[in-house]
Length: 334
Image (cartoon, rainbow, N blue to C red; front, side, top):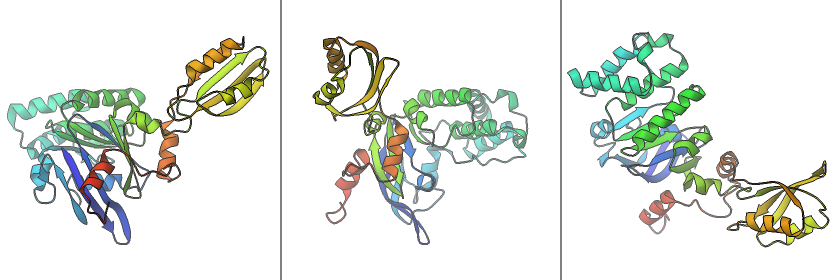
Protein backbone atom coordinates (compact mmCIF):
# COMPACT_ATOMS: atom_id res chain seq x y z
CA UNK A 1 0.00 0.00 0.00
CA UNK A 2 3.06 2.21 0.43
CA UNK A 3 6.14 1.77 -1.73
CA UNK A 4 9.23 3.93 -1.91
CA UNK A 5 12.03 3.25 -4.37
CA UNK A 6 15.41 4.93 -4.01
CA UNK A 7 13.70 7.94 -2.44
CA UNK A 8 16.15 10.80 -1.95
CA UNK A 9 15.86 14.32 -0.61
CA UNK A 10 18.67 16.87 -0.59
CA UNK A 11 18.61 20.29 1.07
CA UNK A 12 21.66 22.11 -0.28
CA UNK A 13 24.70 20.17 0.98
CA UNK A 14 22.57 18.05 3.35
CA UNK A 15 21.29 14.64 2.27
CA UNK A 16 18.21 14.20 4.47
CA UNK A 17 16.99 10.93 2.89
CA UNK A 18 19.38 8.74 0.93
CA UNK A 19 17.93 6.22 -1.60
CA UNK A 20 15.34 4.82 0.80
CA UNK A 21 13.52 1.75 -0.52
CA UNK A 22 10.76 -0.09 1.35
CA UNK A 23 7.21 -1.43 1.11
CA UNK A 24 4.43 -1.47 3.69
CA UNK A 25 1.39 -3.69 3.23
CA UNK A 26 -2.20 -3.83 4.45
CA UNK A 27 -2.50 -4.92 8.07
CA UNK A 28 1.02 -3.83 8.97
CA UNK A 29 1.78 -1.34 11.72
CA UNK A 30 5.23 -0.08 10.87
CA UNK A 31 7.26 1.60 13.59
CA UNK A 32 9.45 4.16 11.81
CA UNK A 33 12.35 4.95 14.14
CA UNK A 34 15.50 7.01 14.06
CA UNK A 35 17.35 9.69 16.02
CA UNK A 36 16.51 13.36 15.56
CA UNK A 37 17.60 14.47 12.10
CA UNK A 38 17.62 10.92 10.70
CA UNK A 39 15.09 11.79 7.96
CA UNK A 40 11.86 10.33 9.39
CA UNK A 41 9.64 13.39 9.03
CA UNK A 42 11.16 14.24 5.64
CA UNK A 43 10.34 10.74 4.40
CA UNK A 44 6.77 11.03 5.67
CA UNK A 45 6.34 14.41 3.99
CA UNK A 46 7.50 12.97 0.67
CA UNK A 47 5.19 9.95 0.97
CA UNK A 48 2.23 12.24 1.72
CA UNK A 49 3.05 14.66 -1.11
CA UNK A 50 4.01 17.64 1.05
CA UNK A 51 7.59 17.53 -0.23
CA UNK A 52 8.83 16.57 -3.67
CA UNK A 53 11.72 14.09 -3.73
CA UNK A 54 15.01 15.11 -5.26
CA UNK A 55 15.01 11.71 -6.96
CA UNK A 56 13.32 8.34 -6.63
CA UNK A 57 9.58 7.76 -6.30
CA UNK A 58 6.85 6.97 -3.81
CA UNK A 59 3.45 5.37 -4.44
CA UNK A 60 0.43 5.07 -2.15
CA UNK A 61 -2.29 2.54 -3.03
CA UNK A 62 -0.81 2.36 -6.53
CA UNK A 63 -0.83 6.14 -7.10
CA UNK A 64 2.44 7.91 -7.79
CA UNK A 65 2.64 10.64 -5.17
CA UNK A 66 4.38 13.13 -7.48
CA UNK A 67 2.36 12.52 -10.66
CA UNK A 68 -1.04 11.76 -9.11
CA UNK A 69 -0.81 13.62 -5.81
CA UNK A 70 -4.52 14.12 -5.09
CA UNK A 71 -5.42 10.49 -5.74
CA UNK A 72 -2.66 9.39 -3.36
CA UNK A 73 -3.69 11.91 -0.72
CA UNK A 74 -7.31 10.75 -0.81
CA UNK A 75 -6.06 7.41 0.51
CA UNK A 76 -3.99 8.94 3.31
CA UNK A 77 -4.77 10.11 6.82
CA UNK A 78 -1.82 12.20 8.00
CA UNK A 79 -0.94 13.46 11.45
CA UNK A 80 2.17 15.63 11.05
CA UNK A 81 4.63 16.39 13.80
CA UNK A 82 3.20 19.05 16.09
CA UNK A 83 -0.30 18.71 14.54
CA UNK A 84 -0.55 22.29 13.21
CA UNK A 85 -4.14 23.46 13.66
CA UNK A 86 -6.12 26.69 13.22
CA UNK A 87 -6.09 28.03 16.81
CA UNK A 88 -9.19 30.23 16.47
CA UNK A 89 -11.34 27.31 15.28
CA UNK A 90 -13.09 24.83 17.54
CA UNK A 91 -12.58 21.08 17.06
CA UNK A 92 -16.12 20.95 15.67
CA UNK A 93 -15.54 23.68 13.09
CA UNK A 94 -12.14 22.29 12.14
CA UNK A 95 -13.53 18.79 11.56
CA UNK A 96 -16.39 20.25 9.49
CA UNK A 97 -13.82 22.12 7.41
CA UNK A 98 -11.71 18.98 6.94
CA UNK A 99 -14.83 16.97 6.05
CA UNK A 100 -15.62 19.51 3.33
CA UNK A 101 -12.07 19.37 1.98
CA UNK A 102 -12.37 15.57 1.91
CA UNK A 103 -15.61 15.80 -0.09
CA UNK A 104 -17.89 14.65 2.75
CA UNK A 105 -21.30 16.32 2.99
CA UNK A 106 -24.53 16.24 4.95
CA UNK A 107 -25.32 13.21 7.07
CA UNK A 108 -22.17 11.37 6.02
CA UNK A 109 -19.97 14.26 7.17
CA UNK A 110 -21.87 14.58 10.47
CA UNK A 111 -21.60 10.85 11.15
CA UNK A 112 -17.87 10.75 10.35
CA UNK A 113 -17.26 13.74 12.64
CA UNK A 114 -19.25 12.08 15.44
CA UNK A 115 -17.31 8.83 15.11
CA UNK A 116 -13.89 10.48 14.90
CA UNK A 117 -14.60 12.68 17.93
CA UNK A 118 -15.82 9.64 19.85
CA UNK A 119 -12.78 7.54 18.96
CA UNK A 120 -10.40 10.11 20.46
CA UNK A 121 -12.77 11.36 23.21
CA UNK A 122 -13.23 14.96 22.10
CA UNK A 123 -16.93 15.21 22.94
CA UNK A 124 -16.41 17.53 25.92
CA UNK A 125 -14.34 20.16 24.06
CA UNK A 126 -15.91 20.20 20.58
CA UNK A 127 -16.99 23.88 20.88
CA UNK A 128 -13.97 25.17 22.77
CA UNK A 129 -11.37 27.23 20.82
CA UNK A 130 -8.40 25.04 19.92
CA UNK A 131 -5.94 27.64 21.23
CA UNK A 132 -7.34 27.08 24.74
CA UNK A 133 -6.90 23.29 24.66
CA UNK A 134 -4.07 21.39 26.33
CA UNK A 135 -1.30 19.89 24.23
CA UNK A 136 -2.89 16.47 24.68
CA UNK A 137 -6.29 17.60 23.42
CA UNK A 138 -4.71 19.39 20.46
CA UNK A 139 -3.02 16.09 19.59
CA UNK A 140 -6.40 14.37 19.75
CA UNK A 141 -7.87 16.94 17.35
CA UNK A 142 -5.01 16.28 14.95
CA UNK A 143 -5.62 12.54 15.17
CA UNK A 144 -9.37 13.01 14.64
CA UNK A 145 -8.82 14.91 11.37
CA UNK A 146 -6.43 12.16 10.20
CA UNK A 147 -8.97 9.35 10.66
CA UNK A 148 -12.08 11.35 9.74
CA UNK A 149 -12.42 10.04 6.18
CA UNK A 150 -11.60 6.41 7.11
CA UNK A 151 -8.39 6.31 5.00
CA UNK A 152 -6.69 3.13 3.78
CA UNK A 153 -3.29 4.45 4.87
CA UNK A 154 -2.51 6.18 8.17
CA UNK A 155 0.76 8.08 8.58
CA UNK A 156 1.20 9.26 12.14
CA UNK A 157 4.17 11.35 13.28
CA UNK A 158 4.48 11.10 17.09
CA UNK A 159 0.74 10.42 17.62
CA UNK A 160 0.96 10.17 21.43
CA UNK A 161 3.21 13.20 21.96
CA UNK A 162 1.84 15.22 24.87
CA UNK A 163 -0.67 12.60 26.01
CA UNK A 164 -0.82 11.23 29.53
CA UNK A 165 -0.42 7.45 30.11
CA UNK A 166 -4.18 6.80 29.95
CA UNK A 167 -4.54 8.77 26.74
CA UNK A 168 -1.55 6.98 25.21
CA UNK A 169 -3.21 3.66 26.00
CA UNK A 170 -6.42 4.79 24.29
CA UNK A 171 -4.59 5.90 21.14
CA UNK A 172 -2.66 2.62 21.00
CA UNK A 173 -5.89 0.66 21.33
CA UNK A 174 -7.39 2.74 18.51
CA UNK A 175 -4.40 1.99 16.27
CA UNK A 176 -4.71 -1.73 17.04
CA UNK A 177 -8.42 -1.72 16.15
CA UNK A 178 -7.83 0.04 12.85
CA UNK A 179 -4.67 -1.84 11.88
CA UNK A 180 -6.31 -4.95 10.44
CA UNK A 181 -8.00 -3.04 7.63
CA UNK A 182 -5.37 -0.36 7.09
CA UNK A 183 -1.68 0.25 6.57
CA UNK A 184 -0.25 2.26 9.46
CA UNK A 185 3.13 4.00 9.62
CA UNK A 186 3.96 5.24 13.09
CA UNK A 187 6.93 7.47 13.85
CA UNK A 188 7.77 7.62 17.53
CA UNK A 189 10.55 8.19 20.03
CA UNK A 190 8.70 6.10 22.63
CA UNK A 191 10.20 2.65 22.26
CA UNK A 192 7.58 1.00 24.48
CA UNK A 193 5.08 2.06 21.84
CA UNK A 194 6.89 -0.11 19.30
CA UNK A 195 6.40 -3.19 21.48
CA UNK A 196 2.81 -2.19 22.21
CA UNK A 197 1.44 -1.78 18.68
CA UNK A 198 4.00 -2.37 15.91
CA UNK A 199 4.27 -5.53 13.83
CA UNK A 200 7.46 -4.36 12.13
CA UNK A 201 10.21 -1.82 12.74
CA UNK A 202 12.28 0.17 10.26
CA UNK A 203 15.18 2.11 11.77
CA UNK A 204 16.88 4.86 9.78
CA UNK A 205 20.03 6.81 10.53
CA UNK A 206 21.60 9.52 8.39
CA UNK A 207 18.82 9.03 5.85
CA UNK A 208 19.44 5.31 5.31
CA UNK A 209 17.70 2.16 6.53
CA UNK A 210 19.88 0.38 9.09
CA UNK A 211 17.36 -2.23 10.27
CA UNK A 212 14.05 -3.70 9.06
CA UNK A 213 12.81 -6.39 11.44
CA UNK A 214 10.03 -7.39 13.83
CA UNK A 215 10.24 -5.94 17.36
CA UNK A 216 11.25 -9.39 18.67
CA UNK A 217 14.03 -9.70 16.08
CA UNK A 218 15.28 -6.24 16.97
CA UNK A 219 15.36 -7.02 20.69
CA UNK A 220 17.27 -10.23 19.91
CA UNK A 221 20.20 -8.06 18.80
CA UNK A 222 20.69 -6.87 22.38
CA UNK A 223 23.77 -8.06 24.19
CA UNK A 224 21.64 -9.28 27.11
CA UNK A 225 19.02 -11.08 24.99
CA UNK A 226 18.30 -14.42 26.71
CA UNK A 227 20.74 -13.56 29.51
CA UNK A 228 19.75 -15.18 32.81
CA UNK A 229 19.73 -13.47 36.18
CA UNK A 230 20.59 -16.10 38.80
CA UNK A 231 20.48 -15.95 42.59
CA UNK A 232 21.39 -18.99 44.72
CA UNK A 233 22.26 -19.73 48.35
CA UNK A 234 24.30 -22.56 49.85
CA UNK A 235 27.82 -23.83 49.30
CA UNK A 236 28.78 -22.13 46.03
CA UNK A 237 32.37 -23.40 45.92
CA UNK A 238 33.40 -23.87 42.28
CA UNK A 239 30.04 -22.59 41.01
CA UNK A 240 31.43 -19.82 38.82
CA UNK A 241 33.86 -22.18 37.12
CA UNK A 242 31.07 -24.73 36.55
CA UNK A 243 28.89 -22.01 35.02
CA UNK A 244 31.66 -20.90 32.67
CA UNK A 245 32.08 -24.47 31.41
CA UNK A 246 28.38 -24.98 30.71
CA UNK A 247 27.52 -25.45 26.99
CA UNK A 248 25.86 -22.32 25.60
CA UNK A 249 27.31 -19.93 28.20
CA UNK A 250 29.12 -16.99 26.60
CA UNK A 251 30.12 -15.17 29.79
CA UNK A 252 29.26 -14.13 33.33
CA UNK A 253 28.74 -10.58 34.58
CA UNK A 254 27.90 -8.75 37.84
CA UNK A 255 28.90 -11.53 40.30
CA UNK A 256 27.92 -10.44 43.82
CA UNK A 257 27.93 -12.40 47.09
CA UNK A 258 25.91 -10.63 49.80
CA UNK A 259 23.85 -11.81 52.77
CA UNK A 260 24.61 -15.42 51.93
CA UNK A 261 23.15 -15.14 48.42
CA UNK A 262 25.25 -15.31 45.25
CA UNK A 263 23.91 -13.31 42.31
CA UNK A 264 25.15 -12.99 38.72
CA UNK A 265 24.04 -12.49 35.15
CA UNK A 266 24.89 -15.25 32.68
CA UNK A 267 25.02 -14.48 28.95
CA UNK A 268 23.87 -17.10 26.49
CA UNK A 269 25.57 -17.79 23.17
CA UNK A 270 23.40 -16.98 20.13
CA UNK A 271 20.73 -19.62 19.60
CA UNK A 272 21.11 -21.20 23.04
CA UNK A 273 18.52 -21.39 25.81
CA UNK A 274 20.44 -21.98 29.03
CA UNK A 275 17.54 -21.63 31.48
CA UNK A 276 16.79 -25.33 32.05
CA UNK A 277 20.47 -26.46 32.12
CA UNK A 278 21.13 -23.75 34.73
CA UNK A 279 18.28 -24.98 36.91
CA UNK A 280 19.57 -28.53 36.62
CA UNK A 281 23.10 -27.43 37.57
CA UNK A 282 21.78 -25.68 40.68
CA UNK A 283 19.85 -28.79 41.72
CA UNK A 284 22.78 -31.11 41.03
CA UNK A 285 25.04 -29.01 43.27
CA UNK A 286 22.50 -28.98 46.12
CA UNK A 287 22.06 -25.19 46.02
CA UNK A 288 18.86 -23.33 46.86
CA UNK A 289 17.48 -21.39 43.92
CA UNK A 290 16.46 -17.95 45.19
CA UNK A 291 15.65 -16.35 41.82
CA UNK A 292 15.99 -17.03 38.12
CA UNK A 293 14.78 -14.70 35.36
CA UNK A 294 15.42 -14.38 31.62
CA UNK A 295 16.07 -10.97 30.03
CA UNK A 296 14.54 -10.26 26.63
CA UNK A 297 16.88 -7.45 25.64
CA UNK A 298 16.27 -3.72 25.82
CA UNK A 299 15.08 -1.96 22.70
CA UNK A 300 16.78 1.31 23.66
CA UNK A 301 20.19 -0.37 23.84
CA UNK A 302 19.72 -1.90 20.40
CA UNK A 303 18.47 1.41 19.01
CA UNK A 304 21.52 3.30 20.27
CA UNK A 305 23.91 0.66 19.00
CA UNK A 306 22.33 0.45 15.55
CA UNK A 307 21.96 4.17 14.96
CA UNK A 308 25.47 4.90 16.19
CA UNK A 309 26.80 2.16 13.93
CA UNK A 310 28.39 0.14 16.72
CA UNK A 311 26.14 -2.93 16.66
CA UNK A 312 25.96 -3.88 13.01
CA UNK A 313 27.92 -7.02 13.95
CA UNK A 314 29.62 -6.84 10.58
CA UNK A 315 26.36 -7.47 8.74
CA UNK A 316 24.22 -5.39 6.44
CA UNK A 317 20.72 -4.50 7.65
CA UNK A 318 18.39 -7.46 7.43
CA UNK A 319 14.71 -7.58 6.57
CA UNK A 320 12.24 -6.59 3.91
CA UNK A 321 13.71 -3.26 2.93
CA UNK A 322 17.18 -4.63 2.23
CA UNK A 323 15.82 -7.60 0.29
CA UNK A 324 13.66 -5.44 -1.93
CA UNK A 325 16.32 -2.82 -2.60
CA UNK A 326 18.94 -5.43 -3.42
CA UNK A 327 16.53 -7.29 -5.69
CA UNK A 328 15.62 -4.10 -7.53
CA UNK A 329 19.07 -2.62 -7.84
CA UNK A 330 21.42 -2.87 -10.75
CA UNK A 331 24.67 -4.84 -10.45
CA UNK A 332 26.66 -1.72 -9.67
CA UNK A 333 24.22 -0.55 -6.99
CA UNK A 334 23.47 -3.65 -4.92
